[in-house]
Length: 254
Length: 333
Image 1: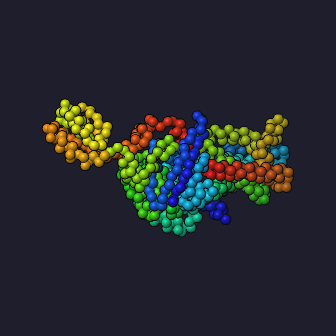
Image 2: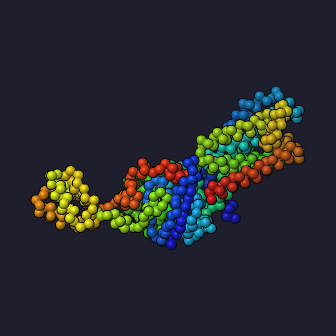
Image 3: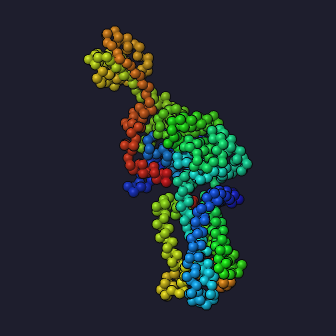
């Protein structure tokens, strides 16, 4: 399979560059770590309420949200890297090769997914001393969800980057999308504790269902409707995200 | 035939409405030629080049490039060509050798061969010892040569160079010219764009002059210069008062045109200026007129451009309509 071989070459190159300059990956991880240590303790007094009595450890509720946030935000801004490559002429140089346009995207997305999964594992390890406990199966499935979410947002980000080709356009656009997504996803606090109108509003956001699903997985309710809905939404998002990305890479670099 | 293009047109949508950046270009490039595409910024050079390199789709027209049909088999075209863009082709943080090897592998070159070929090209293009260097640590000339290595590493039959020496100092330019001539010795065909007259003159077997999206002249540098009405001759006199007499003698010469007097200088154009000069000087001497100096200028490609388009290539920036510049910018985008 040429496409797989080409994807591997693009992935390998992207990964090598990420490892050469790991500062970016470290900075991306510092954000959830700060949430973990500086925001997590604030949840302690209200844990029983927000978890509807299932646990007294705030991290049991908060960590699932944080890894979803990592999957989303970590991947959302990868488009900036693509614009840098574009300016350096790398995208152009890639495009004049006979390599599949899909591989040019997929290799980069794969790099982002690997980085995100490693970051998520580090975050989970950091939360262990704080009392995070979760079944292996649930954690593994959650990491799959993070990977799919990362793939979705990375290809959407690349897609927008390739269309706008400008950091100035990309930054406000991404921030404008990121903020409501974060607030309506129930990452910081579960939406169940909010007023009804806010809950209904957040129902629109597929990410809320994904966060609820990951929380259920961490509780060990693998077969529950929450986790199944979460999986459903993340798979749907991934299909849409990758399709949009692939279409843009094909069209913009025909 | 390495390139055979017929009626290439490319229209861009801009805020001021559609702009036809390329308005029906026909061109033929045979194997082993170095062909230069000469024209001011915004003339449609880069747009044409990007169409031929499969980077943008022509609005209309057809072309066969490196033996493959541009519309039906773009992947085949890509396999046969190397493209060295104006913007560079490597990331500043990346290691030069890594970029070259990965690039070659995207063409399907096996890794070991990619490394061997890449290293050999580094030697040939005067980049010894830079294989493991970060691209940002290379000089402008070195990065340009690295771009050329990137374009050559899969051994293409045809190489496109977009403004290869823009931004280089004179020494690096002269050096790069040598390397571009060397490409032909490898058996490759070279198609380059430039807005430098001296570059087109020094490097190209054949020149296509493009202006406002159309090819306005083509031929060898010598053929093009012959289309201009002869060499420019300037005779400086010791006494400006004798200028009318000299002017009269000059007008009697066969083929002399554009005879003008400016103070103590008489200027005119004449074919083969060098061979008419001895006789002319004898006639002037016979009248007892004292001369201060004589200059003969061969026509330059700038004269060609001036003759073809009515404007000089040198003041391109003031004469290029802004809309076309936008179009060219979008072409790059």
